[in-house]
Image (cartoon, rainbow, N blue to C red; front, side):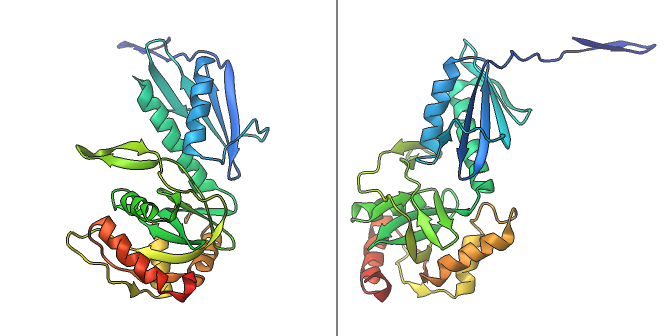
Length: 286
């Protein structure tokens, strides 16, 4: 407790005292090093499982690199926990489910923002004939629905959240359960296991598909210019402000190798059927 006083009044300021750190979990993903500190051993395994879910196949535990970012999780017997990021409180005495969700989303965003040698784009990705179909778009624009419809028709699943592109313009898989919005609450999601084949290797971009849902619309693919395709990607790119020169060179490599298509769409099943017919007629996918 700290006390400050003057001639008129005394003010008591309560200072929150944190339990000492007893455990830590160091890891690296896409060149970003992060540490999570704990006051309880029970939290370590729960967070390890969480990280394997939010960074599928890309979480290297035990790295000795000096961490660039530090989280702290206070694990309470009441299951109302607290989380801090780089010394700043994010949530205090909050239900454990929320704390874990916040930790997962913050970690994933940090990796997307500061990844070395890779560019993260908000996009759904599937593979057809060993070429990536990249569908840029932020949340609630129908990426997951479209990705699921492609997979049901034989495409390989790569991601429903990020297109991860390397310096050569190739897309790497980011395979996690599909985040499907609940029918009774459009802002809440639940995970659904992918019922098709998943990609395992980096592949070149075959198509960039700029599309948004419009009730009753039919897919009528119109070719975009390289500039229009670049804008569609830039609007959905995470680290554009961190290293704009490198990001633009990566996006250009992706655009130069792809068919560039824009069209509104209606229901996903009908749209995907039309798109597959278009793709099968394209020389780029033969």
